Image (cartoon, rainbow, N blue to C red; front, side):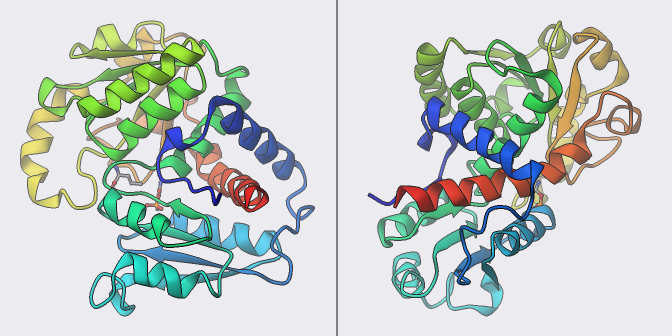
Length: 307
Ligand code: CP
Ligand code: NVA
């Protein structure tokens, strides 16, 4: 059966670990694996803006000997005249995999149901699983073993990034804390799914509305923009609501002294994180951005092996 990555818990704990191991191997020798030699083409479709995802998929597919086909929805038929399932049936005759950044998770599910090639979620309103593979890789490089580490996410915990930290974090056996105002707490169904997975791995989920308590002793401090793509009209309200959940030097001083700071980028310095933190010594955001490349190459190689 064709495997897809639509949300973080599509991978079992063992599969997630296998992809991270492969990513570390590929990182050591960037051009050693030619899984897409032929070259096979991978369609990479964007309904929303992107820098890191666009570049890392294009470069990664080329590294693997393949050919990236970058498509903007604005000048394709998808999203206008044509459904995700019809698009999927057209693409599967010509490409090895479909990568799609979109709004509704349901569109990705429809695309995946309609095709025999792997579909990869390159960010939806609900999840960003490719980013999490890169983030876990980065945490592993800087902190070693993932299981047992405590990761605290600050800010909009009802966002794609927050939901992905919950699912992917507990899949790796981490203790995931969410620090947010109650109105920005994670979606209940995602919390239930994360708790179920945590029960298998020894991880845990904790929702907190006190940022200082949430920071105490954490190994990894994380935040993301307060205004995700598609939420621009709520900007002023969000800045007011989330103001108390900024990652500051004081927050970092409450975390473990060896803690690291990560952020998927792009960042709004002065809003969700102060410059002195994101540009400071504990920040590993540039390693994290580079790791998109290695993690996604491993994901592509792994998915194509399953088929
Ligand atoms: N982190 C991330 O997905 O960045 P882009 O929006 O630039 O792709
Ligand atoms: N939560 C952000 C992530 C950007 C990579 C957004 O959806 O805009």
